[in-house]
Image (cartoon, rainbow, N blue to C red):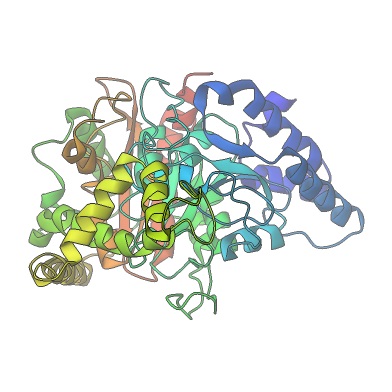
Length: 498
């Protein structure tokens, strides 16, 4: 029975619990057992909150027993990226510098999940402070891709995506600064959504690059992602960048997805050298499928997209240099060298040296340099101008089309360690995803088959204008349904068992 439960979608689990056919406790126990069985190999979780999860599940069952109304995901287990503060539960951001830190408060996303009776079963592994494209930069070891444990699960949210692909959880939360929800979704054969910037509160989410960071839903189906999106989204007074507008009806779009008459843009800059042949083959098949479903395909050019990677790797490190200055050994987290022989400045330096990993140090130094006197306008200022050009290119594109599609990543999952000594090769993994973060619009990755040369998942990226997140779910649901009708089962069913 436990093996059957972990294969159900979040929507199916919630419906079963609401009808009394399942209990939240048995659903939670099934997923906890799965974690115990396989996570030693996957390393998707940094902390499993067994007692806390079972207590939440018992409360859901008690509410149902009292006849209280339950939310659309009540009793469904969820894996939470270890970037969101969770009261009473360790939150490390994948870094040694926060090892053992237990927050005294919940992030807004965490609180909304609890208020909706979603069962948070644990905190997932990630690149330190969300800086990376492979989840190899975690201070607690890399996460494996359940399709092939010798390969990366994407980053920085590889733990959340891997937990879905390994059937350790039916839902997860990730964050997306340059593609860290969509890129892991693509290489693990799951669904990941970057909502419109400001659509989901960042309060209590450990900051990397404040003008780019965005939390969002991860799931195995488009409908499950939509249900989770509706739970966590919405205005929050605690976040000054939060959008004070109604959340688009993403659930309705996911339930009734269809693309007849929709204008779909294909950007020529999202292909060429560096793209794996099998990835492009599956992408071209997806475009053909959209045509079959009644969409109009329009070729587009967005010249500034070729400069997005360079702009991102000036803007994001600059903002991280500022944000990570708070980790100074004086208020919380690790403290090294406080033996009475060192000054406060020396203790701060020793702590940051011991607590930060190589990638974090690399980005802090790059950002500090870009912001320094005499270089600010040449580097950070110029990058912001490119960001404006990218936003304008998107605006022009959306005057012609309703959504834009592209490969999510240029390649499938690469072997762990293959790019560890080549930061530029690593950064190229986010080539297709970064423009949406710079512009602040919404984007999604859904599975679109397996690359023929290696049998690994390929992702289709769907991009929509700001506050048009429902278009993502409309297109995603239509493509997902067409794939399942054609091949008879979800692509994830082909993933190797652990």
